[in-house]
Length: 93
Image (cartoon, rainbow, N blue to C red; front, side, top):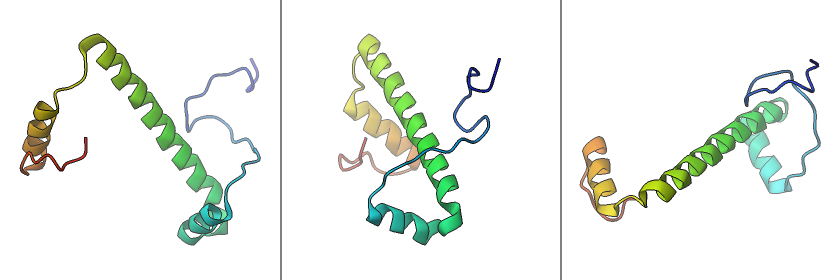
């Protein structure tokens, strides 16, 4: 089996170059944070976080199909309990 045939999880395996097109403003903001030599590592981490978020969104959607959506009041109460704050309606879900 060659590396091209192998399955790797995000963040694993050899590096491979691709061409990516970004707006100038986005590139400038990234370079201000990490410098010219840190752009690839920054984009790698950003892509890994997005994949994690996409996977979580899929899990939540599957859960909602089976069990229905979460009760907003119960979510607010549990959030308040976890954060030590009031269960105000202004908190984002």
